[in-house]
Length: 125
Image (tube, rainbow, N blue to C red):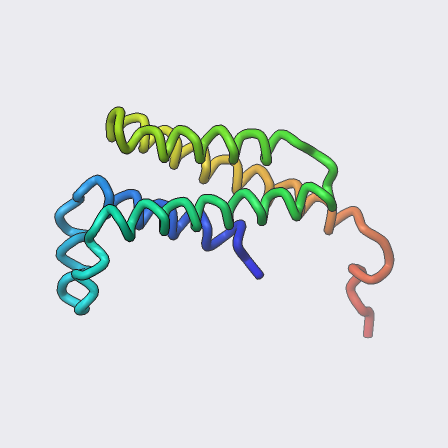
């Protein structure tokens, strides 16, 4: 599963729907998914994508041992959801932090993979 990759993308898309961004709402309506434009559907969906992101980053923490990306993901998720009632700027800051935590996590995982043992070596011919 790549929840640490698709989680932030889904979160951004759903948050844009919650904020009423016209091009996103228009795209949903154009493909016949206009029924999704309802806070009773969007807020739980946003929560699901945020939870998937946190879970993916937490799962990778078990590999690289750093808690920073998980902590940042949780704080970002709280900002993104709370921002729906506060300000679009707060939502944007939360989503930016969420993407940042995912990129930080991805970098740590890549570093671990590059320093790992013999099963990551290139095969010489």
